[in-house]
Image 1 (cartoon, rainbow, N blue to C red):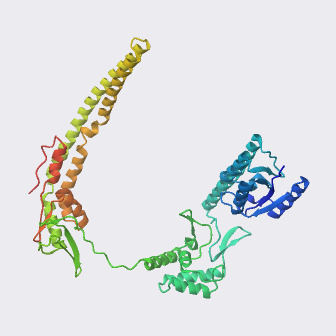
Image 2 (image 1 turned 180 degrees about the horizontal axis):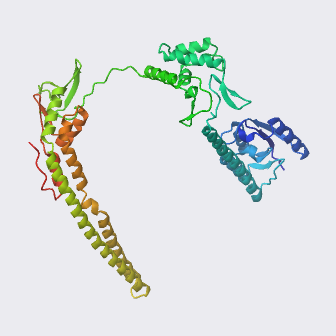
Image 3 (image 1 turned 90 degrees about the vertical axis):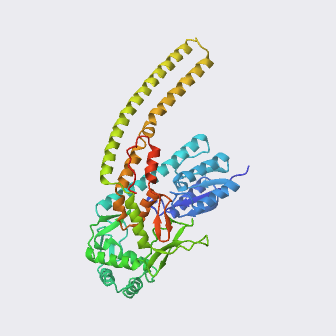
Length: 486
């Protein structure tokens, strides 16, 4: 009989969950002594210093891959040394199920590769995972409580130190003067980040590897609110209980310099608001170009026969404004139309309620007929096929009536809200025409004229009344809609 090889696995993490666990050296000594007492021979030892909270341990996976390929058993101090997550624990149990993993040996945990043994092993893995999850949640809760008390839950930034005696963050008497001087110098806007890096290097403040602090790190130091008495945690800024190194006024001045230096220096972008709005009288599109600081519009001349002249954007804007005024709605008309619209709304609501009530009564009658039909079928007065045919017909009719009730607001009053919105838009058209926002005028012109705006010989023209006709077509009760001014 071939005896499976036994592999020793010892692990310890530097994380909090392994704080009370034996060191790797102690684990190895205990496991070797256990193997000697039990008469077991260790074929190979696998040692790993990594947390088991997440899958992906290289040495552990190497061990399981070897067992999956060649078979064998594992000797470990406790099941939590093997797995603290569901993936690794599940893989071990699967290898036991397939017989590739012959067995598990623990000095402090009984295990046999039986249904009961695997059940107990899965419980041990589950307890290990629960312990890690609870520890993580308790740690986060403790950090949140610490933050609420104004305590910074991390290492102190340069210029401060973590006092191990009082467990508080205090000012570093030597480095704090240098950091404060750095803020004062940078606030004058005469220092670049590269110069700041040289300044800190000459003052003895360098990285952990003895090199100059790079520019991005300098920017982080200068934008850290910790130095004026606050700190960031989880994307929020909290009031700290540590002593501030600089004033908030000085910190704000430094932020202004950082922001001004960080803005890219680009030329102001010239907008061409009315492109895509008009067509040339020849049928081609209208394009725009900038000449001597001004925007001019012209035909794309793709037809090769058009000789339409240029028109300056200011002149084009004036003409579009005049067209918008011509289709605007007078205030007194708008008020009367809104009043009529409210009356239409009330009348339609009454009509809808009466219509809906009539349909509900029909539904009630159908439900009664369905119930009676079911009684007749149960008394075996009709066969199953006739029952199903008649019931399906009644249910289908009931569903149709329910849909008719649901769609009432869309079928009878659906035009009211678009109409109300149009009245407000048309009333304010004259105000939009005087606006300096070209893009707002473009939207208003598109709503009023659609694609009917033409440019011919520096003259803009268009067919007005598109919105008026659209409203007329979508509703049956708007004979009182007035015509446009032109």
